Amino acid sequence: MRIKDCHNFHDFRRLAKRRLPGPIFNYIDGGADDEVTLAENSRAFDRCGLLPSVLRGVSEVDMSVTVMGQKLDMPVYCSPTALQRLFHHRGERAVAAAAEKYGTMFGVSSLGTVSLEEMREKHENPQLYQFYFHKDRGLNKAMMQRAKDAGVEVMMLTVDSITGGNRERDLRTGFSIPFRLTLQGMIQFAIKPMWGINYVTHERFRLPQLEEHVDMSGGASSIGGYFTEMLDPAMTWDDVAAMVRDWDGEFCLKGIMTVEDACRAAEIGCSGIVLSNHGGRQLDGSRTPFDQLDEIVQAVGDRIDVMMDSGIQRGTHVLKALSLGAKAVGIGRGYLYALAAGGQPAVERALGLMRAEIERDMKLMGVTRIDQLGRHNLRIHGDCGVTSPSQWTAA
Image (tube, rainbow, N blue to C red):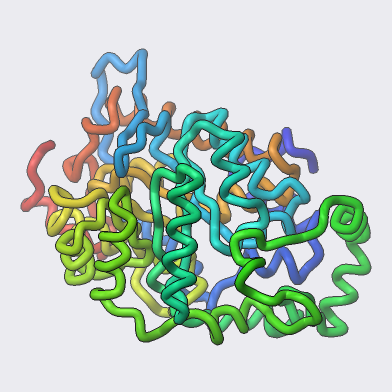
């Protein structure tokens, strides 16, 4: 199987599984506990059907959106994800370049493997910086100031990860940074030697956003240890409000799932929220972002930009989210599988396929602009958290 043979999310996943050692593939692929939420995130979209209109003159389609002050050529952005150079030696460099080609936003994680300064210097497309709230308040301020100095447009605070989720696949293989592999995990690396050759023949693996603050040498820290020892579960809304004031720019909270929390985010001056359950990697059994989208948009959509991630695999998923009022949607695994499958060319292909699906699906829906989509475009198959069709009004 080659990159050109990949036509959708599942094809890239299969190719990534062939190329990555088991522990690393399972780090991308896995979720928390029984992985119920992981599976449900995508199934939630199946509970609503699209209602197309015809004879609307759709020879040209404009899929551009503006979110948190950033103009995107397509309503899908690359969410920040950790450890990307473990999946391919170019890591964030490949993802940022592919996102730039398609005129969309990309994120750099505080657990990223390329510096946010390098990414901001090399690429002109919008960039967001994702970070966590640390017990060391000075570290929080230093990380925000570093992003501001680099020229990052959007600050994103992840609020659903004050402790790490119970990812049992990683426990079974011993996946951590530095590696503490079980025998089963070591065997998986041994049968995928090309990954190891690429790993040792390219530049040293680093976490440049954290290396001045976290000792990664001598096996002293793991990703689990970072979450357990450095992040502050005592974080409150007052803490976040202070950060929003300090940043004084586009500030987004990732991991919002209730109307109450969405309202609080708007009240303290956030410009955006991302409905997310971290791709099913944190609290298993949590409701899906798509199921929560309608009521949250109705509550705060006129005050704050609402986005969502978790479970996006198809252009039709994107259109369903946009129809319920999402300004844009983020993908994680959707580009990580492609990155692992073949670096920048594969990420470009994945984004290109997504863009083509959205364009084709907009034409089939009878719309030429994103703002023509609305709740009138959907009908319920089951309970997808959307109000009764009789209560919907045409956009």
